Length: 143
Image (cartoon, rainbow, N blue to C red):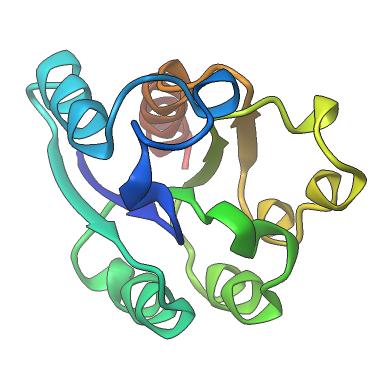
């Protein structure tokens, strides 16, 4: 399976951010973990602090990928534009968040982008990415 893994703003700073919420691993550690765990699959990893760059990747994804794993970071709570881009794409989509959003600030509990995904995983730190890939693979077989 070909999977696009998108990471939004500030996720390039993993390892330096609040370890209680985000864990101790870096984004490179997560990438290596997924490549090792799902070695028969192809991954493209992309991180950007720019909303427009993330939207461009989403819009072009049907031409190259079988599914999208997205951690939109703070854009999950604010970006109607990313929500609309996800709506346009007819691929399996799973949203993932490192921290447990149900225990965070009230504004983090409003997930605009997750409503356009098949589901979301929250609170399992880097393990959420593995769970997301597992779910994408299951969804891909069903669709």
